[in-house]
Amino acid sequence: MTEQRSWDDNVAFTLVRLGHLADRRFAEKLAAVGMRPRQVGVLEQLQAGPLSQLDLARALRVTPSVVVDMADDLTELGAIQRVRDTHDRRRQNLRLTPRGRALARRALQAATEVDAELLAGLDAGQLDGLRAALRQVSADHGLGRTR
Amino acid sequence: MTEQRSWDDNVAFTLVRLGHLADRRFAEKLAAVGMRPRQVGVLEQLQAGPLSQLDLARALRVTPSVVVDMADDLTELGAIQRVRDTHDRRRQNLRLTPRGRALARRALQAATEVDAELLAGLDAGQLDGLRAALRQVSADHGLGRTR
DNA sequence: TATTGTTATACTCTATAACTATA
DNA sequence: TATAGTTATAGAGTATAACAATA
Image (cartoon, rainbow over all chains, first blue to last red):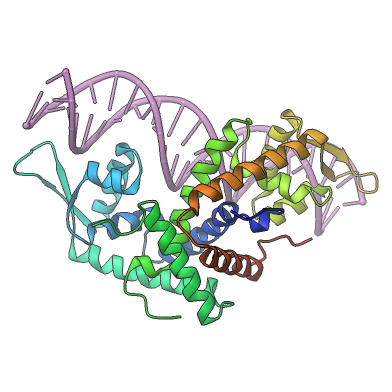
């Protein structure tokens, strides 16, 4: 780790600020479809197949009661369905509906628009480097696609 | 902007997730000094000199009532002082105390530790590229040092 | 009249603890 | 006993609106 003289050299601090900025921009775009940023993480995880609420809580790194809340909202939106597990009736498996898949596509589109606005000042090389570095850090800390 | 097939290629979405992770790690370290992440932004801004609460709100991109709240807490911590502006008695100029400067140093140290843990998997080249790209994006959106 | 700061209030996001039902 | 889900409640963080003091 090289010497850090100023806050601008610190990646963690910068990630927090840029993360907040990206979240706000993302929220504005999603509002047009009636969604909020944290719901998108659920849709993303379920795209690879159904998950129990507890497994989803672990994947998203939130506490189980938060998943209940998000699942309630997404069910009301028609994006997911709760399906009792036949072999373990305690489990509520969450699965995407066709509407959920459509919403996931629109969310990815919104996120892509945010990228375009956020990263307009970078050249192709900088952009590739940024993507590669972020993907590496995400993978190192178990935040990417794990299934 | 290149084609985005998956969420892992999207920078905005990744920034939100990594920003949350960095914020949590940062909060854990700061708790040892009795501080919270959002207070560090105030100390950072004031390091270049005093600011009125409204100017600070603009710099931090939060609503003025939030600054009142943060200033209350930091005053109680002994990190800042409110000084009535002599020429415009409506203004409360916030300035760092020696204790505030010390806390800022410890916060930067904590942030540097988070960096070391977060970025351990990157080689020197990737790290330089990441820093440069983040600095560029921050500057493009008015988030870096502006004074 | 406009600006600076403040208070009251509400909303979102997250967490903990106690509970129900299943295993 | 242990696990999956749920509910009630609380604590941050942020925002809006109404207000007081000052310009």
